[in-house]
Amino acid sequence: MKFHDGQPWILPRISDEEIQRRHQKLREEMRKRNISCMVVAGSQVNYGAGSDNLRYLSNYGIFYGEGYIVFPLSGEAKMFCRSVNQEFNARVISYIPTQVSGYPIFARDMVNFIKDQKLEGENIGIVGVEIMPASVFLDLQQRLPKANFFFVSEILLEMRFIKSPEELAFVEKAGEIADYSYDAILRTAKPGCKEYEVFAAVEQALTSHGAASPSFILLNSGPSPAFPPAPSSHRTLELHDTILEEISPCYGGHWVQWGRPFSLGEPDKELFKLFEVTMEVYQFIDQTTKPGITYEGLTKAAHDLISSKGYTWLAPATQLIGLDITEAASMAKGTSRNLEMVPRPMDKRPLEPGMVIVNQPNIVTKDFRKGMLVIDTAIVTEDGCKVVTKAPLKYAKI
Image (tube, rainbow, N blue to C red; front, top):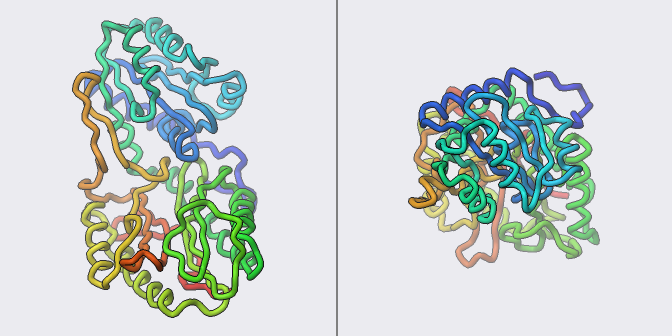
């Protein structure tokens, strides 16, 4: 991929070749499972990350409401949008033809399209039933009584896990954007400033350098913060405060996460000790992340190291990331009569080159009164990992 120096893409686009690769691979997987048609659901849930599969197949991510793609084994797919203006926006960048639909006619319109393809009695795979409204799924069932429905979110999840060189270029661009948070915080944070002013400066920095808006930002401050629980508050920063944050910009649909601790003046001595332990765990994760180790094994080893130091944590020390902020949190399998909800479906899968992982050790005292947090995003390579966020790894004193 070639990026214009100093000029963010207003609407990042993937290539025709990349879309064709994804569509071809999906149809190969459909043939293996004897699936004649897929219904792919997407929504604005989780800052729009719920449209991950729609974006993967079409290049269009939903910013409000929901939408669907009907993807037949042969022939052209179609995207169903919830309103006239959403369809107008989708049409600009979607590789899949679009149609205005919405409530209460989503199922009606999708079924009419399926019937036009003569697929109303075939095996139909559902991707994203985890976020599809029950009313839409039940309506599909009632309108297609001869169809067999299968929950197959794992197909696209598995396809998305290994990023292509083109996708990894988006990940690296998102990492470059995330690093602008560092200067934004250094420039803005000072005694007398409000937390929300720091939040706003970070959002402005990310958006002005090409991130989709809004970014996902957690931020808090105080003499002894533990973990950022919310976007920001009206709290006034004071001398000797520490600022912790989890900052997640998105570029071309691909999310990364970033975080550094900042101190207004001299930090609390125990927090500095926590930072030293955090960096020890960070370096352990960085050195251990490589092909062959499972996500579950890597995370457990990091947590064991934290426990051995006499501390605990408030969030996992690692996280898989991609077109969803938290990839593979849970997944439905089976059918409507034999449903299985699978937590952490990819935990035991060995890491491979092209996967993207977040290194995010948060070290917390056992009374949960003090904590520390450092976050970077890395691409798994042939012999280790490559960090895409480059800001200084230090407890920055302002």
